[in-house]
Image (cartoon, rainbow, N blue to C red; front, side):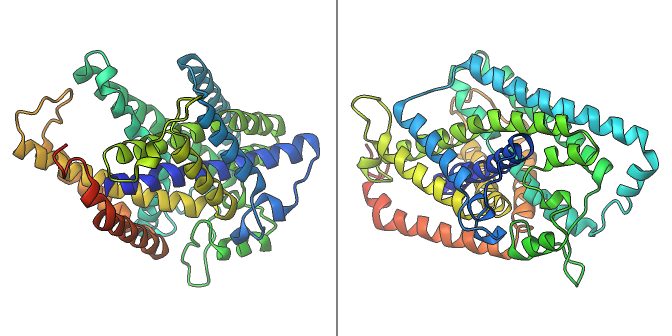
Length: 391
């Protein structure tokens, strides 16, 4: 079930990032080259379009790269990280420069500090959790890491801390410059991200709000008369985000490959291409689904669906850690979780709280997806599992 839930974390998340990349790409073409892609071909149905062609094409391009075996070197990946961090740092600098020059205006943007109360904060946290999708992939390198007992926790917790600081600075920079500008219905309830109601509300104001923008950071810079900085941020996103899509799709194909090799999925999924030496069958299948998600669904809905799978997987892993600690206390552990009977329950409670803060529609989709996974397990995987056969 964890492997099945991780499909939502990686494949659906890859679709969400593809949609996010599309927004910056379309905005860059419009503002720098004067090329306007028709709305029908730039966004999905819920946003008033027909098909998101740029998102569809970038997903297929990444799929092709994975099939032919193109991989990123550590050097190239480091360059892309530098580009992303530099772009965010530049954004933070100009945002806070504006805030310090306009203290009264910026102060008004933070009042009230939580217009929808603690419940609104919880719902926002459930959606924003998408920013942390993929951090668990660090743990897969434990066997190749020198002194993993020391270096893995430092690497994981350190990267989480640094990214959290950037997230806080970027979010406060956006709110301080242009305001949160939440979209609410007649009853004062926030509109769900990616919903047709949100699209209609944004259209009514000419998409003149940060929550309506498909390129939020670039749009924010343009609102404070920094169009060049906005274009640079958009360019950085256009260059760096495809690497995120690639890594998420790679992670997904690796999960399916291992499940197939262990008998949980048909053996055809673990077939290796004779020339490229890659699992081409499952890569192509994954790519088609990611491209479909990217073409027809909004980023907000995809992010929430991805969060549901990720939160379920994280909670299940926390339970498994406690079970293994009791049933197999002598197992070799490169890293041993300290105070596991305190840390794990807190992790489970946090994951469940955020999980149930997701929209009812998202939870329904997760139940349907989990049901499909259980059906596959009992109808096929259980009888073919190598572990079940003692292989």
